[in-house]
Amino acid sequence: MISGSAAARHFGYSSARVKAMESRLITDKTMKEIASAKDVSTIIAILFQGDYKHELEEYGGQEIKSEMIDFALSKNLAKSVSKLIQISPSTERKLIRTVVGKWDLYNVKLAIEAKDRRKSYDSIARYVIDYGIYNSSFIKDAMREESIEGMLGKFMLNSPYRDIIKDAQDEYKKNRNAYDAVAAIDRNYYKLVGTVITGLRIIDNSSARIIKMDIDLQNIMLMIKAKKAGAKFQDIGQNIISSGNISAQELEQIYNSSKDIESMVLQIKTYDLKGAVDMYREGKSRQLLYFEIGIRNYIFNSSIALLKHSILSLGAILAYAYMKEIEIFTLRIFINSKLYGLSREEASRLIIWKSE
Image 1 (spheres, rainbow, N blue to C red):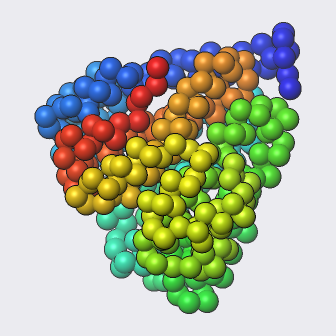
Image 2: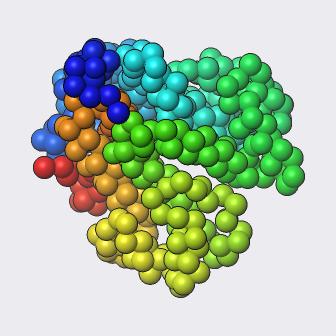
């Protein structure tokens, strides 16, 4: 671990830039105003006063159409991700690229799911993160392929993710199941991240723990969806990602000893999800979203703590990446609350911005 004057020289520029970016994140007070806003146009007026002004102007300004808001949010996230790579010390840039690679592969997964539903690029354009090798232009072009296999073949060309995409293609060929292809991408991406965690623990153990929380989130949501579908653990076992904070063996034990979603989630002691369970039980629509937000709360607050105490380290860069992702995630919940079938009161209870 780099310390003292060496850390100041190594991370000084990066930390100063991250601090500037952090200052533009939405504050607790502003997020609460957004949560209680009476309509979408009020939310837009609030966002116009902060870091989203440029992107909102690009897609229509304060008169932006509701269907264009997601374009602006995705564009803002792409800008932030690109900056993180640019400001990282050259010796850590590969590690940062690996972590933010989730947004490259997020676009690939969007394309697979859309192609499987026989949807066009326009149906997912608002959610595409216009960044990296799989930017909006690439995704649009790839989706012109007639089949999922052909599209995946295009994604493999000159790609650092070739092995990951190839495995997804092989999985798809077995049963022509798009879910299997997406699951293979997640599994192999987080396997790659797992190799990064080993080295990262030596440099910054707190950063490694936050990445492991992200892996836990993927595993727990997979188990919740499987439990809801009445599947056996053996049906999903190959898609459980190792190297999280919760071992695969413990997850299997929890899954097999639970009769329903609520009892399963309550057994996960690493995260206090009782509040999420209560909201799930009380909610008319029984949204699985409650559980995802419960875990994201932990990631968010852990990232805040890391950002505050990792002034001259890699942790400050990684913490910002997760906080920005969660900010976008939360804004989408509030803006699309009708889509989720949530009342204003329910949406307000889901707020992640609960840090001290």
